[in-house]
Image (cartoon, rainbow, N blue to C red; front, side):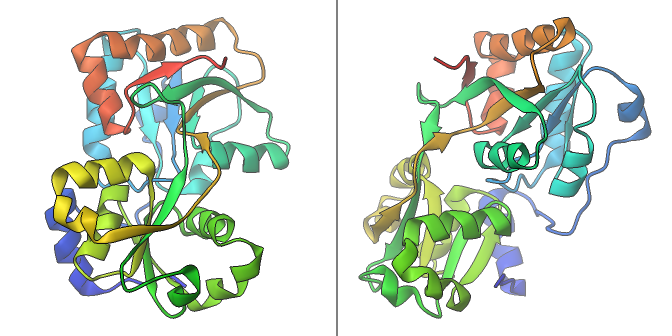
Length: 270
């Protein structure tokens, strides 16, 4: 069950620097539809709360590196409708890619994102010290970033088969970023949070007091941080787009844009 309360609006505007609207519908503009080629972006694991900043930053950079542009989406359905033809690059989560492949959408991994040298991460279920074990999560609120469908999937994996019945008695508070989820626990707005391990690292640096009040209840399996995918084998145009992505980490303007996605570079699969 998803939980939203008006008081959270004020809190998350303060800690996140903007308001994320769960109901907004980011559609390609007329110019975007006509322009080619394109980077399409949707991530089930985050809720970016300022698409204007993300798009402007990428578009300015990409204009000077081939005349390309970024089209972000905050609705999964609209993103999936965009996967129709070759010549574009699709930026999405590993979880979403697996789901699409099960639906026979012929996307294949071309590049994987890196963060501090890692290409994979696992999710952590952290709770305040009043929650000694997962069985005590019944009738509590868990904060997490990402789509509600994704959060339920991760939570189910972390809890394991023996605790699946808990899911119907847990309320999910959807927030923009991992750090917001962890801060929600620190400020008493949730009893537990799901975040990537590097989210906990950021909290330890930013607010050591809140970090010390948390303890770990479980981990998910490791998965790729973010994926750049193409429809089947990349053609010449897609190969050029992938080259642009890989070279972003070599210049300051590119690094700044990658940071907006929570990554620091791209790598081929080893």
